[in-house]
Image (cartoon, rainbow, N blue to C red):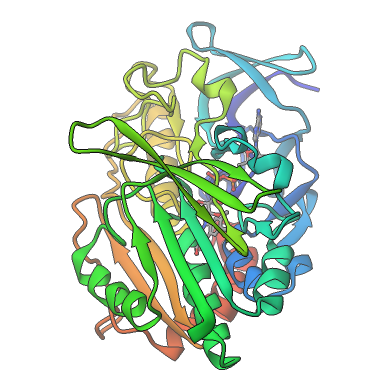
Length: 401
Ligand SMILES: Cc1cc2nc3c(=O)[nH]c(=O)nc-3n(C[C@H](O)[C@H](O)[C@H](O)COP(=O)(O)OP(=O)(O)OC[C@H]3O[C@@H](n4cnc5c(N)ncnc54)[C@H](O)[C@@H]3O)c2cc1C
């Protein structure tokens, strides 16, 4: 097996596969290898619907081999270290691969251990998380069997993939309990590390109404630090007026929690990491997606320090930019294509209705459709439940959209 490739892609997830496919559409003769350890590929955006009983978890998992584009080589290994000065990476197996140009796209790391007790109680004691393939069905079990009491939904203080997912499931749960006639018996709390329900004011207004009609009690700037499963208690920290941390607690009957997130450790501990970012993301130019210090390295997807919302929707706009710029570099031209920070967050506000929030780096709405997307609609629900999954497997991963 060759150990040198013209283009080496790290990670065969949403970003890595889309980029490989688009590169090969541009030029079939490119020598591309993808380093990806997993036999399985997941459509993670549907895990919210799985947690709400609206999607079969088995339909979110496919064989990785079926999506490696024809013409690309799959190296089933995991990158352990980077030697950018030598244009080399070393894998866990010890094999060293070299490249002319590299695309880094290994996604984000779920730091379950940053919330004490979370990992130990996950899947037990009525604690679940849609951030895990194994757990999303358990979320639905909890929502379905809830008979009233205190339901707690948490959102960490770090950036995460799909910033909307921690509260999307809360709105669906409330709607389900309303339909069961038990919402009045439910005391719903949202404990969030963020300072507001959503960062784009046009969309935040809609969500404030949803929060208020469901009588959800919000706790902003509140960082979940511990989940004691046996005592069914969440502990979180808020800052007092002097800025000192104060610990608070809330007993729950069910809890949907989301782990803090950061760059994967092998990125964090590498020369590619942004030294000014404690979460260790790959340091890139947020417009060209080119590494700030190593010109023949690019990155896209959840692993970068670009200040955009980390979603598959963002990747759909990043990939054409990164592809164009990598090809420019191979042709010894300047990388000039630019990404504007576009991202989208499809937020179901109840069963059958969804608000498609689209925006850019400046948090300005960037609506695709010729109607006010801040108004939740059935058509957007259909887009999320049926159209986007089809597009993902058939057009996005194959580099056609
Ligand atoms: C619950 C939930 C809901 C979401 N909802 C939405 C939504 O509604 N809309 C939306 O647009 N997005 C949503 N997302 C976010 C979306 O799934 C991610 O933004 C997207 O998958 C990121 O793509 P990626 O390629 O960066 O990472 P991933 O798709 O996670 O792929 C990373 C790949 O890198 C591989 N890898 C890891 N370590 C190594 C290594 N050492 N060497 C080589 N390869 C490695 C992994 O095995 C994996 O295959 C959601 C995510 C979750 C969890």
